Image (cartoon, rainbow over all chains, first blue to last red; front, side, top):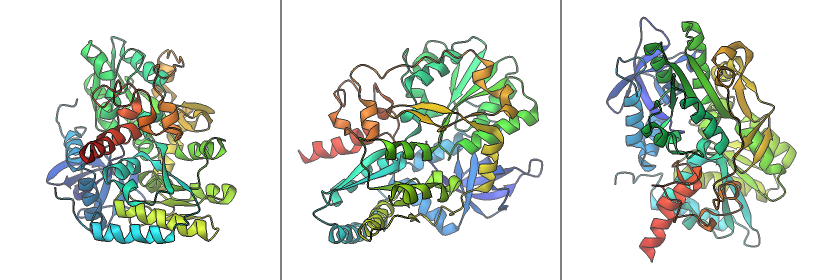
Length: 95
Length: 370
């Protein structure tokens, strides 16, 4: 429920500036970056993702820590499954 | 298993554990509450109780969203789902939470259109794709999740959708901590503060705990070493006679939180005068209803909600466990009638629930040792 998943931004959508393509362990999906409007993010930045939204901008080292934490909690696969499930901007059939 | 590293390294953990053992006053008993269910999960998964001195008691807090949701609210959500024209959407955890007439998953099997989503934005998309249906999102969660619901609602308004609503069960952690501090049967010496909630709220909202109640709060990360370090920081404060808010999770949690997230919440939600929490009863100003600006998207206005209070299933002592008065195995149903495959109470459903965590790790460990 309170999974916070580290991902790296690949690109910001040209049509929808609040959407960013992120990579989480090789899985790429769009997430909403509206909660980071104060900080501003761009390609290459690492973010923590929760229920389809980037919640905070973090450093590369923190992202590694966070990934290791998910592995330690046995939740790394759940995290990938969650990200794979975000279908709101990727044309997949939801639920 | 690949999770052996310095946060789990027995040598490093042993070092901090020994430091804790050197620091504790053997004449004292310490009751430390970990507020967040993620911490509860980590504590059981990594067997942290076994490396702590016996006079440090960890009390599991209310920070598990499905656990604190009273059965009556589950019933209310399922009453919405029972309508022919409605698609009810919710997170995976919610699918297995029992209401009076079954879980969302069971109702789905009986024909209700209930769909699991990973993001509230997926619920919104289902609404866009199904203009003849009304799509309701069963929102749960603390401040970590509430901003996402808020932005989803603002997006629904921008899109001008008329077939989307949110059944808000968002709650806020600080009033629950105050209720615990005010409760006569809950003597807590200090708090391990929530990690991801604090990325949104920052650390300032906990200052009243230190200032008005004289109890230390240390916001902590989720790895074993994070939690042990937080406990050590708490011990240092207690022994120095201090009470302040400290941030052990600085690498993720900014002291001021996320201003954009707080603005989104303020724009969308209105604090309810009171809300019922399982185990803790009615707590003033502890939950977020949908405010006037987004009233058209408020499921509680769109639908006629039964709003009937329901007691916990007979024999189940979820409330006592949730308050830390009972440990999970002290409940009469634990491990027999109530288990992760057939949860009777919500604390057995989520991996963040004390009963599920205890069942999965502690019972198993005891069975292996026996």
